[in-house]
Amino acid sequence: HFELSEYKFENNVGKDFDYVLDEKTGKITEINVNGKNILASPLEINLFRAYIDNDRNRNKGLWEDTSIRDSFQMVDSIVKNGNVTTLKGYYGPYAYEPLMCYQMDITKGDGYLDIDLSYRTKLHVVFLPRVGLKFALNKQNTVRYLGHGDGESYIDKHNYTVKDVFEFNPDENLCPYIKPQEYGSHYLTDYVKFNNVEVYGKKPFSFSATPYSQLELFRAQHDFELNKDGLTYVTIDA
Image (tube, rainbow, N blue to C red):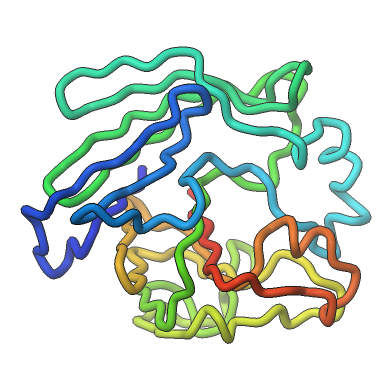
């Protein structure tokens, strides 16, 4: 369960707030506040990440067999009931069996969106790199969060960190590995605040905010090949 809210903690409600839903894919293509879209890329379901070193020997074949990198979100039905929109659809590669079916309930509140995602994987899927959401924002100068830090942290790599409030500049959050891979996660996060948007969950989540897209990290063979495009790429994982 994730909630995406505009200045929620400052009680900045009552603004002209709306969102645009792509009814073919189920992606949220715009979140407009006072007529300005705060998203730089759609908010969508995300199962993919760049390989880490362990994946190359252990899980790479599982990813390639299920074509996770080439999969995408689609929608079968949309039902609107007041301020709640319910999507039912699937996530998978084109012309092949889906990896999972999902239901997403989007509730529009006063200055925020409440997004509830539930899913069921298909029987042939034995491994998923992650399950969550992703989107991009225009370049952010400061990210403030309550979670494990200040270094990167994961479910199996967080004992060296502490849970506290931290800040960092995502544009300076460069990949620390010579061979680019997934990096920068912050485990057991209660909330994360960007320049113009906040995210928090009913349960702690993991997030990352970097200047590189997942495909950029996946394709680059060396750290000096990574290119910034002026955006901040955000992942939110359950």
